[in-house]
Length: 453
Image 1 (cartoon, helix red, strand yellow):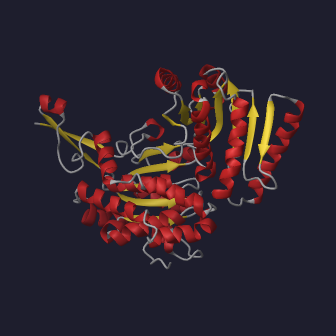
Image 2 (cartoon, rainbow, N blue to C red; image 1 turned 60 degrees about the vertical axis):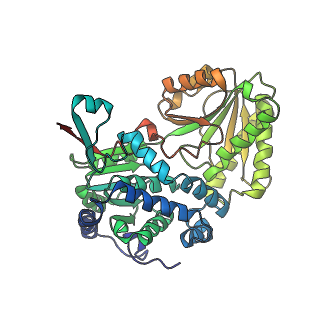
Image 3 (cartoon, rainbow, N blue to C red; image 1 turned 135 degrees about the horizontal axis):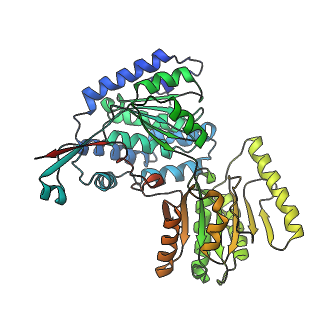
């Protein structure tokens, strides 16, 4: 598929970007926003975005076909992983969900268009509207495309021109997406710019930051600190740092057929995007005392991962990644030989999947790429003590519990600082209206104007 040269990311790989090119691109974005975007109705934007998302679910869509045909070489994810991830993402980008997001964050779907009043404002004789940053800059990180695509959609909903700077080697899927938007609505596409370069290009970033009104950044805490230091004071900064996630399965959930279903759901969390992302579990904690013991759960998880590998293979890894898994496996092979409280299951003749069972409740960072810890615990208090090293860094907990027990566990997790709790099996598939890191998705982007009538 030969994409036209609409964006900086379309330039030949040997093309050199300059600060002047970045500055001029930003100025063009601002002019195009004033001409094509500021006066657009929210309903028309929702219609374009939802139509493009629906088209990505069509097997005949040329952008989807391109992604599945060449995506493995470009992203490292096998076609099966890409297809499942794209389906899960785009199936949620509906007109109804987009409107619900605006209502959730802004209180009224027409708030971006005009002054509106809720019941409290009506009593007080007030109305309010919101305005967006003129130029919204996104600094993306990680290999998963979903956060970048989501950021673009949020920016369109609030009518900001956007400059998306992708980390080196990660612009392929975002590039296809912005081209699909441009094909659907060229005026909307003209309010977007996409580029890719290695972090630390101070001259390019200085030129970009000077033009920004608001900047979102995803990456390590060190990266975010560096960006924050470089930004002019006038730029609003929204940083999303490194987070981890884990699963928790109550003893009541592990009974008979439902217990085996939970095993299959847990495997979906491990397999989705090959565990690469802040929402993927590093550890699954299993309460002792159920009909399925924590150790048996780990064995069933290993069996399910082995079966899944034949239908949805993990794919190949870089030598360094495979070596890291092999080294970690060798450590647990020695420990399992010396202690009955540790067991290891692994794929044969490959590093495709690994399950480590331990009685030690301490949280462990996984090698990812389908390397999962299962740990036996007596209750959630034991888990939270064991996870103290990542206190304040936990994004998502996949929970298997029901009734009053689920309510109790969710309340404990919320008070401890977890920002998202979901059913096991849905960790890498958040609701489109979720509050990333506990913050309003588009509410963080806008500023309000109150009218006291």
